[in-house]
Length: 449
Ligand code: ADP
Ligand code: MG
Image (cartoon, rainbow, N blue to C red; front, top):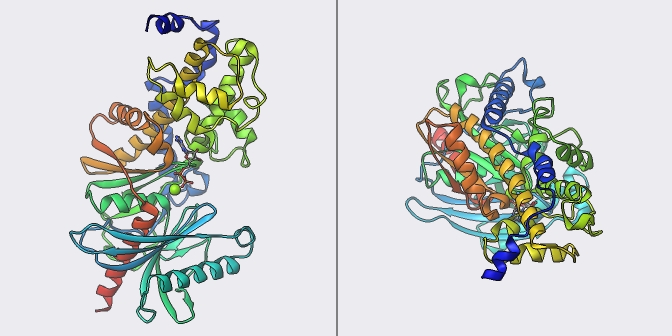
């Protein structure tokens, strides 16, 4: 133990220089408060009719009007189309019982993914048919389906999204499927948790990207074009998909944007867009850390001023590394950090370098968590209930060792008058989609009777 302690006492070179390089990423509470104000103003603009086009956050109406009550029942299908994989799920709901789910992953061939919409939907329809045969489902009974489509899209009704122009159910080879809802993954997370916790009024994604949805009262939703759904009272809620990742597309985040953020943005496929998302989410966090690390190397503060070729390559520092490095405890000799450095072919390093790398990861992930907390705090202020559960989905939140605690701590500071908790959402895009379908189906059946 003595030996290790002595080695730990090897101090980083140029500590002042290190502080200077990290400083722009460390924001104080006043700054987070200012950020909240800007975000609130932008969201209000997004909710308005006349200024929506100037808003970064588009505040899309999802047409989801209520959360599940727990009394939903029946068989539902869900489709989850996100990355290259595509899932079909069968969900069985019965009141007071655990949700039963069966699912199968289908590949979406690359040429279909980049082909025409018709090809894509033909492929999807084929997968559904094969899934129904595999599950022995009665082809003659119409089965309601919810579709999680994790891309921004403006909806025109619960079952109509502009990106997919899909106004009628699938019909292929005698299989009857009625698509009753197209939902966003944030809404899936919200619905899935709300099934168990009636206080759940906010859904959040912290994965490849970041986004959030929440229940807003109709009075505040000026874009509401009044579909025929009940309830129509303006005090009643509708779920708004904020698409908050786009915050900062204008100049709202310029006041905190660092040179590292600017570099990441320039490297991305969509420069100038999704600025808030680029400061927070898993797709970019590793690269922000790498930008800082390279700056430290160049300043002679790390690895004797020499980077490996791997480290010098953009996007080589994966966000998952940050979770691993921050999982190292004080006296376990940086096992995980060393493993990451090995993977990056960095041969010559001291324990002091490990300490600095760990500090970089902490600073970058803490800023991300606090920025997300500021957004959550804005939504908490908008929700009228005193006690709110926030459903969270995404690998960044799930696997980062400190994200949950960091967000909780900062939200508590920024929204001192709210009682809240963050809850991990399990399979929102499957179970959540089926629940939206169940709620919509139950209502439409009730109306017909
Ligand atoms: P998606 O957002 O595409 O639905 P996920 O929620 O699984 O998928 O998020 C994937 C992202 O999470 C990856 O892009 C990666 O950046 C990040 N990620 C994956 N594993 C980890 C980890 N162990 N720690 C932190 N972030 C991770
Ligand atoms: Mg996801």
